[in-house]
Image 1: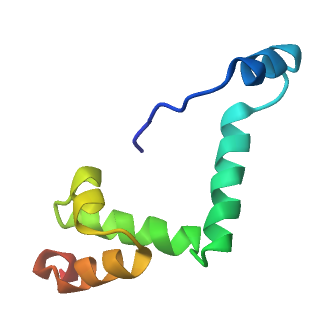
Image 2: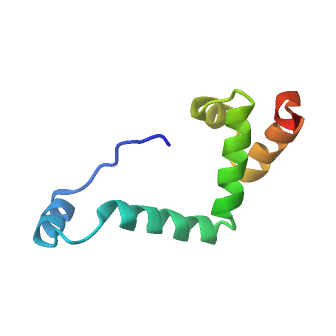
Length: 85
């Protein structure tokens, strides 16, 4: 798993401090899943493709440079001889 930074507005921080019981990272992941669903991306399939790409020696930066949608990633994994092992 790779962590990244997200910019949060001051009003968001204030709201989360008022409601410390809210799981902000959970809300973020839920929002990402909703956007994936809007784009027809199946999270489990995407996770599997990312795992296959990593097993083939590609890292996240490689994937960002070489792909920009699940079909690109699938083609990359299918065309990599190491990913077929």
